[in-house]
Image 1 (cartoon, rainbow, N blue to C red):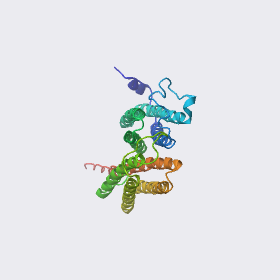
Image 2: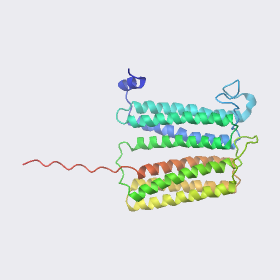
Image 3: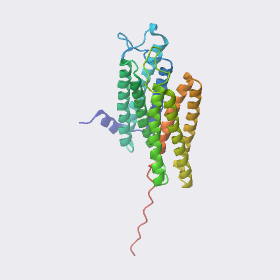
Image 4: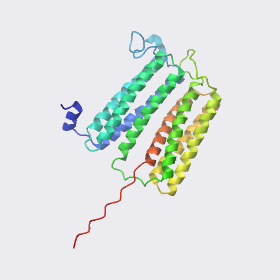
Length: 313
């Protein structure tokens, strides 16, 4: 029995450009999830809606009495609705692309289920009154969504492009090291945030039992390691004339430098709210850069053309 998707695929088809646009929109929405969460945190709006999935025990949306915090938290929840629409469009566009859609459709469904996971963890976060470890898990789930969205967009944009030069063994190792170090950097970042002053609500919310200054120093050391690995890979890729890998690693280095400058400034200036939001946005950009650098360091090289057959004479 044909499924609705298979019936649609038999009647309609989409261009590659449509799939690429849909993958980019889902990536931008995944970034917006991270930024929206940071706005909720620094404005103390994490419990602006006291229930989940409803905002109050009686209403889906916030009431006038809940003030600005209810509006901010409910607006953040609406990002998930927009994300579901964007990911749904990606799944349909990829499924209807007869030439390249199979893998991209699977990646679209992966994004969908991560959105569901993220929504559930978001609900648990409200139920446990912003337990900092659950809040950290919420950010990690958002990072998983960002990972899937980045891979989808990267693969969609590589279709039809000339494959890059073959990466060397050292470049593969450096790409893997960058991904691992950046992942640890993100996790330690959740500990720095969880032990810092921005609890996510104006009420007395427990914090992680870590010394904020110590965690911040460790966080900075991993950022420095990420920067060093990125520079190393950039120089190595330039020497081997792997232009695609050199460009990806250079963009990562620039992102880490910018993120490091923001991080140092916010630490010295008492974690101002707007700068914290910029730092969370920067974290998303750095993670995207690390993933794309890793994928490029693992890209298959162009296959040489088969020699022409020699006619028997």
